[in-house]
Length: 357
Image (cartoon, rainbow, N blue to C red; front, side, top):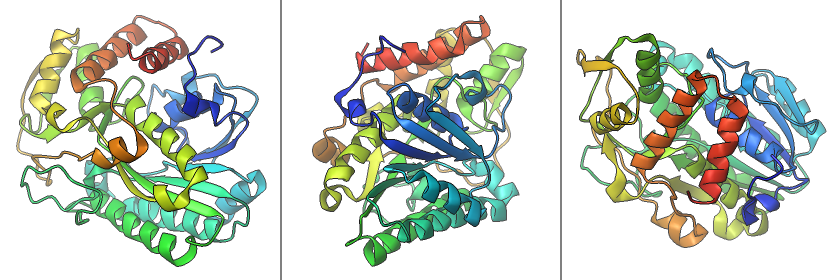
């Protein structure tokens, strides 16, 4: 990607040693590619991709990129890979990220999301060299009483479903370790909470955009669980460049930049599921849909993040509104199924985002 526009935040990462857990997932693939193409030395640690197609398997990485296929719960393996690599920065994205799957497999969800986080924190306790670690959690860590409020970082944590609970529990764990072990150490940590992330290359089950794409491709009917549910939709590049900016600043000032951070769209830019569907249809997705049976599992009706802290303290701001994010995502999939080069599609979106086009 020789002609890709480089942000001043990305230039900081040149020649830095970056360890990414969950690098084969949707967000992890995008983050790995961004950092690899900006001359970082990246090592990924994750299970094999669990979707077909898989974004990770369609990307080409440099010789500075290495991929370890292993479980976050294999403590000794994880420790060896981190200690041997001696990272400057760690991005912890490994997770079981699907709410419905968490109902079906609660123990696996807690093992991965909570115990996996605990494993990494324990390894960080033993690191002597300077290291920054960002723990990626979720906007669903908050206690949601359906008051139609935008959650701030210091709002009460909770979780009515196993996924949300596992991530909220992880947040408590991260805060405990930060105060107990890392306040005077060379390790600096923070947690980040993003909204409903969309973008090209996600083929997960039980997610709206991938479900729309499958209905379009297969000419099938889409059953929509809750078309009136409101979510903070954002393109994947929004939080990723927020994480990048935060990691850079945390490297220089742990006192100011540790803690928790929200990354989402503007509060007046949240949309219902039904609105997302309509934008997707007018942008080129051809499918039929109707409201399906009431979901037997709990789902919040309203979710929004207050991003004032990230805007005011980090000078981070969303670049693409939710409508543009949806249209960019639809365009990506349409071009993908026209056999456009996947890597070029990724590069086009990154350049467009950095140029604010």
